[in-house]
Image 1 (cartoon, rainbow, N blue to C red):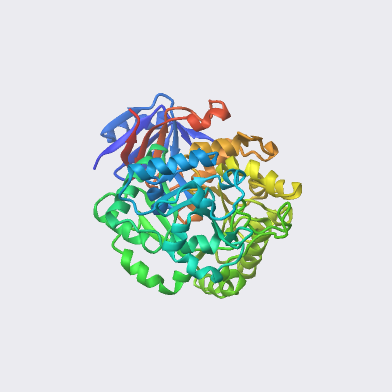
Image 2 (cartoon, one colour):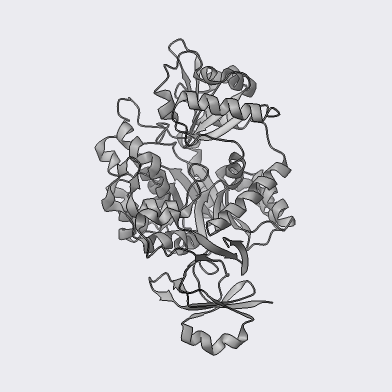
Length: 523
């Protein structure tokens, strides 16, 4: 078993201080202390590494992403830089010509609001863009999409229009589907897209895990679908599961949990575990389906509750999960949705049982709800990177009162609540340093957004490490560089504490270690 000592380092600690040296023995940290203390044990290590003052961080933890779907989307059309219909048309045509074997043209990360400004949405808007093969391009929030008539036909949605509301299948003045679909209608089409093979999924995820390492990410919270479990099992069998996965499966899978546990029991529990259950309360801001306490500007609606909320199923399922002392994580973006989820969690709250329920996104929080996160021990799982879109979108869609409640996570931190960072990849890029830059500076291409709510760098690193570990019940094994914990750590080429905040996203990771083994090196 190899052992390495690292000296002359700047080892970040959760208390805001720094250590100078640390050692690893096999898969764990065996020593953390000063250079002087390291000299006394130097001879017990096989290798001594002089880090020349470089910053060392714990392995970063992305608190919310979609690992399999996101990995697959990286192989599809990336529409994140498309700003007009003509560019979108050219992008789809070029992709179709390059991929003649693809029966559907699929992509994501489109800013649909920009594209729609150029369209009257008469007849099928999607057909104006491309009509030769079915195509489906999601909005960046993955709560709405544009598709053509062939996509609506082949998915079967055209024969099921009565199953969806006017908000879910947008129609023109003549009652013809415009090609804009949202929420349940989007899910309907998504579930009927051509499915990649297991080998394609494994290849995509394996490639993406390498990208995670290049950013210093060694652990993720994955919003898992049941078919994803096969991918993780096969990756483990092939020795390629080089990231820790905390898996959250849909609420309705609670009744079949034992089946999923049995299916995945072969996987090392230090690499993969089903930690809890995920549900949606509302939709998303850009698609005007997030649930707010006020109407959207110029609209006569304030958003959307998902079917399980409207029919009351959520309350029975949530009680069963809570009674089993298992964790719930519920998507809530609008301020009214956040209030209602806090009401739900508050009805179950027992200070003697730490279920650590979470609200995913919590993008808009009423001042009246800030203290309730701490009161009910509710974790806020947030994505400052979404400000790249939201800084503009809130001004277009919300009143000033609601806009002022956008991404107000600093208030949660001040109240003593636990805040964790993730990206919601593939909604936005997985780069943790860009996530941190936006949290620290609140600076976007649309200007600086409520700078008084910026979060200090030290707190941002806590949100990416110890706080995330706590949120997954992993605080005793990962999240900090501490003797006895797993040796997941990142050696930075650039010191985040010494560079200008606006340049944080460009900082480089020099090396990433996972379970004591080097998995990435820039040199």
